[in-house]
Image: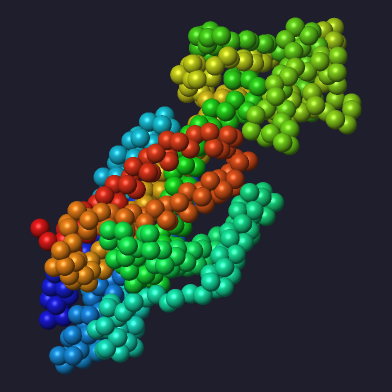
Length: 598
């Protein structure tokens, strides 16, 4: 009987639940995708570079789990508010509280189970599509890639079911300790309290001060690190709430007193609608603003990583490929490289020393990359003067460059004259160091060179360096960050939109009575539509403005990692704005369909 009542309750409000389910489904789908890409063991074994992306996606799973936990806490309050009047009526008709407690437990668990299962199924399709994009971007073999991965499904189901069981127990506890009259009438009670001007000013100053402290810590993340990040999140969150609680309340009170505004069209009704639920709106707008900042920031930073892979590869080494005694096949591939400068250095190994001919460095000077403390993202390419090539001084620049560029065994290098070199009793090996004008134009050839290297060549020090291998590692990290950021942003956008939509639409049934009264008083439908557009527009615009501000200052924490942090923000901002406007249009359309007569 309880199961039947639960299903009937869900069915009667399915449209409302659907809004909430959209965020939950997206969260579970992306969580499953992250887990699949992070735990697909056979795929990771077959492609060594995937392990870097796998670590990123595992981190993304943890981050998404934390955000989802907070989202479900908010969603849980909406589930309660939507059904609490029905539960109160059941109790008025003689139903026992324990029975109703079981009913709400089952409803919450059913909603969670539906969202998780549907999300996992959506996640399978999403994983296949994203997996193919990731495989193409990272230029790896698709062997053993499984979009449908049982361990990831089990982890997803376990995580979300446990969270919803906790939420269901919490709902049951709240219901059993709430008086019946409060359950029946809470939705009709105003949530606003008139604030004094002094209180508004104090909260505004405190909120602004906390946000400034958070911004400062984010801009000095290299100095304060994890502790600074944790404190900044708390200060910005609390500061945002105080700003909404003070300035929003002050703005509503100011609009009430302004005759020029309130006496125009239906503005008095608009202000009344906002002030009626001011207390709960401030909490929701704070949560939405923080999710907005996290979502937009994740997408912006994710797309920022896509532009630094090539720069990071260029800064990895002054040479694009370094081989020792290349084979005939490798020499043929070296000949296919375009716009190249090739230097050949003869070397002999004796004990713990490696000897080089000075004439080779006079003919082809050795290049090095140097970085400054103020700019660690772009190395300065320079030649080493052959006359200063010595390992006797304390600042062994030449020796360090040789060890990291022309050797693999980290022996002590020494430069000698051609005559002395010829007298050393050891086999001569030739190191070929190639610099290219464009890594990108020669990427395919460098890939062929990396694929032709055998394990025996690596062990015998034939293979010294290939920028394509460096590119794969860096691309695995930054490519994973790009995908993680984008999909984390999409998941959080779905969450914040569903929270705001649900908050607005959950009050539509009560608002319908007021719009019916306006209709009876002769208010034109066009004016009522305009009032709805403004009211919902304010609720979408305020957290959007605060969220964008948080992102613009929050990007400072990535300035050391991503050069020109603000140079590529237009595209993610435009994408996010279009999606956000889409949610606004959908909310307005649904709200009008409920409150206005056809």
